[in-house]
Length: 168
Ligand SMILES: Nc1ncnc2c1ncn2[C@@H]1O[C@H](COP(=O)(O)OP(=O)(O)O)[C@@H](O)[C@H]1O
Ligand SMILES: O=C(O)C1=C[C@@H](OP(=O)(O)O)[C@@H](O)[C@H](O)C1
Ligand SMILES: [Mg+2]
Image (cartoon, rainbow, N blue to C red; front, side, top):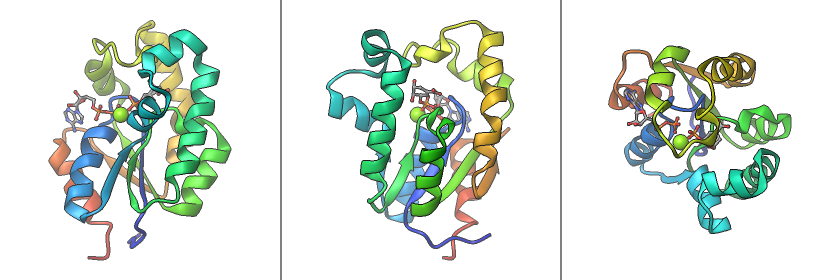
């Protein structure tokens, strides 16, 4: 499938490279870049861990959906957070307003990237609990229009793979 749509959503589990690849892809396409987590942090005046600690995951999910609605009117590459595909309303909104990419990689690759990173509250728990979250979320990710297998690829190589799906 080729795409010419100007709003691009990057989805996938924590550590898949959505934030890293999104910034590079936006440069290549000459589009604006929005990282949904950064957008939420700026809007709320709190870091993601602070939101989780102060208000809990359910509150974060509401802020996330609200932020997604706001950015969905923009022409940009939008790097989402790994949990955005959990809600059907978010998946439908992304599909209606843009092209959704799934950055795929096996759990063990992602785990090595996120295990020591304190900026992800949900990555702090037990490895097996995290693996279960990964498995449970896969159907939501696979629902994307385009899947990029990122295993063994550098962020630049993932960008090259993504670019192959654009008309020009
Ligand atoms: N393709 C890749 N190969 C190796 N390391 C990567 C790759 N993509 C991202 N990383 C690294 O993994 C970590 C998580 O990347 P990030 O872009 O924040 O992922 P996400 O936004 O999907 O959670 C960062 O340290 C980043 O440098
Ligand atoms: O998977 C998740 O539920 C989350 C992923 C994070 O974004 P990244 O996928 O960019 O790490 C961030 O939105 C928050 O910590 C929750
Ligand atoms: Mg990110």
